[in-house]
Structures are given as structure tokens and as C-alpha cells.
Image (cartoon, rainbow, N blue to C red; front, side, top):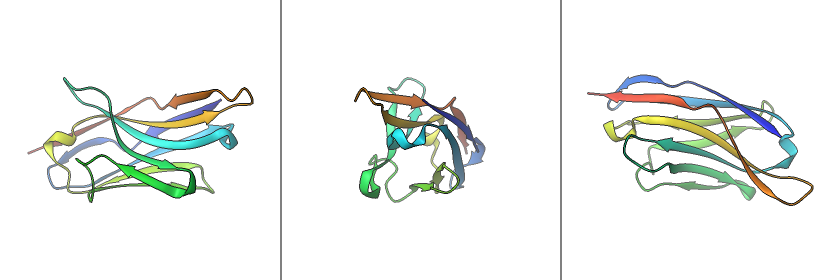
Length: 120
């Protein structure tokens, strides 16, 4: 199992920047993918950015060119740099790590969630 602890959310004005961090511990060797999700009021949970094997990245269209997902391998920390924030970026952001154990079963592991509020 892995444990994920997030930090870095808060209140920011539109156009500003925030960086979310997610410290990952436990059986990190079993991780095959990383992601940042967003829960916004009245909307389904959305994958906003992902980092997969081979360092391939995915970004939702709504955040392309503004958000960057990265990882510090030495510290086992996952980051989400968010620039030019918009009102629609408001929500609870959750980091995730997808793992595969010796049973070859995929499991999604979640952080506790961090509120990001973008104001005018």
C-alpha cells in the first residue's frame, strides 16, 4: 500500500498561481501511474493531469498550457503547478497513485484532498 499526503491548496485570485504537493510513502515500487483529480461543485470528478510510465503526461483540455504535473523521484513527491488560474479551477484537488501488487490487481490510492478556491 501507499499513503499520500497533500498540501499547498488555498485561496488565490484569478490569474494567480498555486503549487500542490503530494508526499507519497509506503510501497512506492508498486506505483505505475500518478494523477491529479478535481472535484468541483455539481460536476463529476475529473482527471486534470496524469504522469505515466515513460514519463508520458496527460492534461485535460481545460488545463493544457496552464498546469504542469511533475515528480521529485528522490523525495517521492508529486507536484501540480497551476498557473493563470481561472474561476472554473475551483474545487477539491486529490492526488492519486495507481499501484499493481503481486496479485496483478490495479488499485487507485488517494490523498485526502485539498481545497483550491479561485476568486475574482
